[in-house]
Amino acid sequence: MYFKTIRKYCKAENTTHKYYRLSESYRDEFGITRQHMVMGIGRASMAAEGLDLVKLKTLKNKNIREIGAESICFQAFH
Image (cartoon, rainbow, N blue to C red):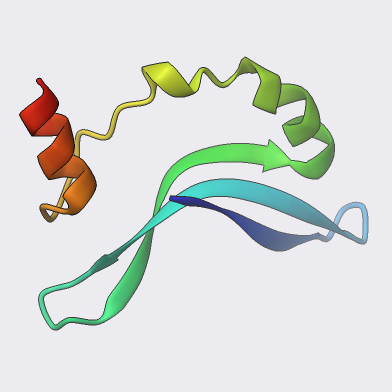
């Protein structure tokens, strides 16, 4: 997982804003690498305030599409 920066243009304000997303990479059925957004963090000014509120120990991914090393270790641990 990684943080991805997205830029969006706002017509009303005539400005560009940065948004942050927590994303993960996976391969589809054809072997092509794709990205999946796990959680939207928000704009840059909002993200600085909101990142303190994210509790990483409570994050869970229910849509696992493939078995990776992390998933196998997690299952073996439990």
